[in-house]
Image 1 (cartoon, rainbow, N blue to C red):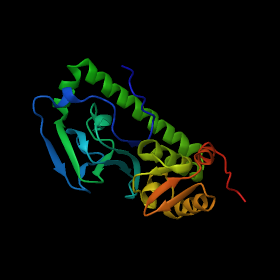
Image 2: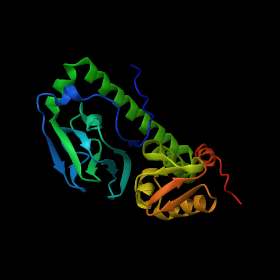
Image 3: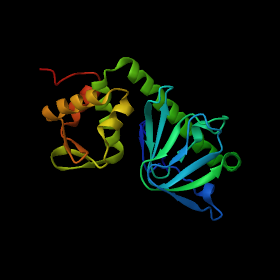
Length: 232
């Protein structure tokens, strides 16, 4: 069976990997409310989570207390693998919806993974993918304007949460705030607001109740690739 392709993206939902071997034996899950902190960067690495349902945000915080979103993980994603072979967590992890999570101690997770080739390969692939995501993001911040980064973020979220509509439009079936966009692409709230207004006025996207619809995907892709086709 051909393995599904997972594109490097900040938005990971319904991961195609099979974790049944990880939770065999009647492993129980726990419920977490929206806004709960699973762990903080710099804390001792003790626990790994598997998301049964819900969404978790990964972020980092600088010495001045400013938060930078790294990505969002959804159903069937593992949280904490980036730090599993280190003493401390690399990121903050916070629930952004009600979540059902399987919880593993660091030792339990490593033991189960190391004893099964399939689980080991899946974890290695996830780590490799996340390295690519962070590398691409670093390059994006270094070389691309925030306007291009916002276009790319809209495309990436549409790949995970997009629903085809009439006339080739794509509804992004996920509510995201301008502040979250600003954190994600590394810019200010005002800048994101201006960029979104520009895209809306150009007829490339539309917004209704915190949900965005891509009306002209080709134009948005060209902007993500570095063009500014909305210049007047």
